[in-house]
Amino acid sequence: MTVFLKFLGSRVAKVVNKPFNIPIGDKNTWSGITTKEFDANAKAYSELLKALNDDDIDRVIYCKSAYEIYVSTSRGEVNRCIANLKTNNAEFKN
Image (cartoon, one colour):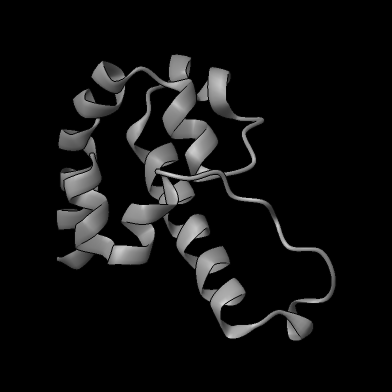
């Protein structure tokens, strides 16, 4: 899974390895790094949700970050989803 996330960018791949706290305040007041981390988390979160089946989504729908989704699902289930991600990505590019 992390290999696919690295394909999306190094920040995206790093998001699943550490807890993410949603920044407080108006988005216009965030630093550049905070904004990039927020965007990377959103991208990873979205891709992880796309890869999961309905049973897994029921378990992770209340997770607030990509890290929480990654930790909540067993690595076997996440790795099984790689094929779905690659298929979705290929369809999106075509």
